[in-house]
Length: 91
Image (cartoon, rainbow, N blue to C red; front, side, top):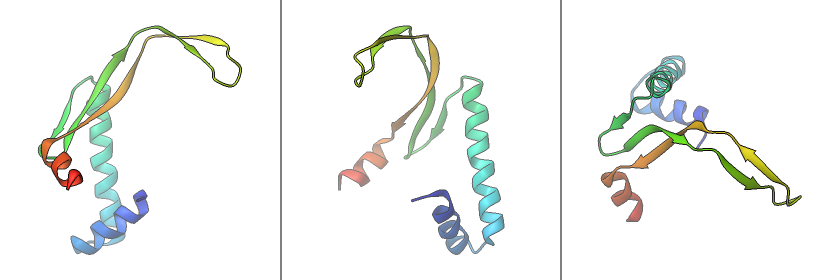
């Protein structure tokens, strides 16, 4: 599902215009991003947790060339699914 598909579903189910649904989704995503940039978790009960992880310096091998390359430490987004989401997907 792409964002535009999600906008259409939200608009239909929440009885909103596509514009209002799109603005709501954009605001929702922007708030998640702002919170994560500050290094804070976003916990959506039953769905999961978005967090920022610190990744240490490491050496990686580029498969095509076999070349070794150093990747500097950085922060990376992570998502951990909640119990309810896992249960629903598992079936």
